[in-house]
Length: 108
Image 1 (tube, rainbow, N blue to C red):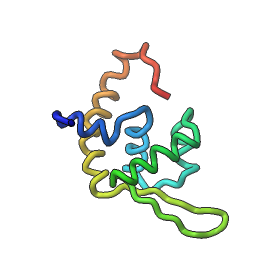
Image 2: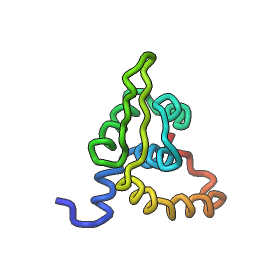
Image 3: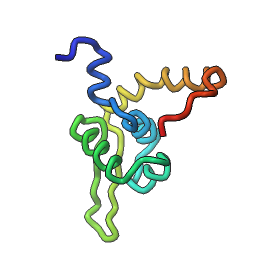
């Protein structure tokens, strides 16, 4: 059972890539290939899996244009934007303290 608000947030956005995916989708509608380029190191399988889970959680919306070649776009939902706004201070903290944690490797 989830008892802490942080538990709830991490249940939705936990994992190595979801927060970074959310960050990029909060800054504009993205196509799958664009997200792959923005997230070096993520496998196609993992990106598909995380996007599907984020869609099921209501964080992102998927629009399939039903054309060839396939065109699919991912955009932020109002629910996802509310979480994006919650992690914005964490992004600001990272920028402010980047020099203090210079020995830490990025997750990707």
